Image 1 (cartoon, rainbow, N blue to C red):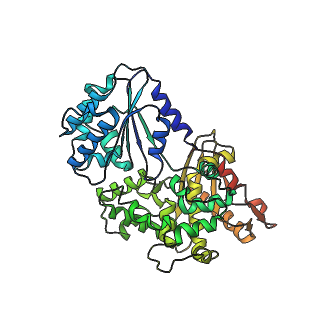
Image 2 (image 1 turned 90 degrees about the vertical axis):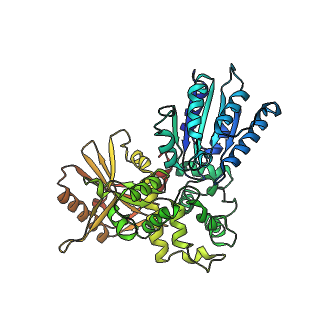
Image 3 (image 1 turned 120 degrees about the horizontal axis):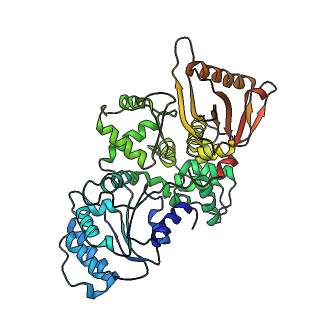
Length: 476
């Protein structure tokens, strides 16, 4: 099994504790939650049940009864299960008690089990407080609807309040983990190729699994996105519907954010959508952020209303840019985009997102991982007398310094012209003037292969971080 080192350790610790444990695991669809749980707890699972989307209560109870028989035998089929209270009584009667080996009870796709107006959570609370909390067990509650898990389980106001002893928000793989995963599939790509693929599909294991050995990254992207039966060509239609109620609202926000590469403030989202400035939009933004589809980046020294929201899901960004509403897809289609303006804009934005997500790796490369830092962005709107500018990644350090990061995706060394170097110098001084900061300001370039300097540019760039450094850390 690749990666998930911290999560595995936390899960194994629950097996050796001297009390009953309740683990809540959540994360976006396809991120590998079920695989991780079954892999770590495979020798301890005494009972597991998976919810069915849009199933009736009667159907869920019927399937639960079948699972009781599967795990505990026909002798456990002693009573009709007509309610969740009956279901938990059957589970209690089937479980072995006074055992040395810790047993795991696994409820997967919990939001689907509960459905609407379902008493499952209430009966789970009673069962835990009345019986399970005194047994040698780990109860695992898992769901892809991350915001639902937070609201209904972690922030439960009733009998489940504060009963969860461990929570794990499972994020997509980092670049380092993705490379290890691809290598486990015998896909031998270099760092540049891994980054190209990551910018198209993200760190989602089941998406990465679509890569094949003996293919270039270009061939793989062409096959899975642009051929008639490509796996990634139809995934988008089910992605949000499986996670959110009224998912069309979430799709509207995603499509809106995809239109502006620099991200949008809340007010800009409102101006481009049907939303009003209220709780409806707040809920959608929180749900998308919890599920890792968007990034909410604070603006340096500005109010909460100036938070910048960026579409951070690599797959959604790629799909909306190159697949959505396109009818002329076919083999070798991806090659046609190389070098186009659309490709350059997309790759630049996707690489910026990738670097923002891997900010910890960048701090390690700068040698400041042990220093307290805050990351943010900075936007200065154009005025009559001044051109506007934006810094997508600003690292504010406790050692009286800041890194103003310029992020560039290139297929070769980035050519630093005198003009571009002067632009970065001017931006640094303008930032100093606007913010009144007394801190030392470092112009920092993050790029793929490095920089080819012009004679006048050498003194304007303080640090250069290449893509290899983004692979040096396994956790965001």
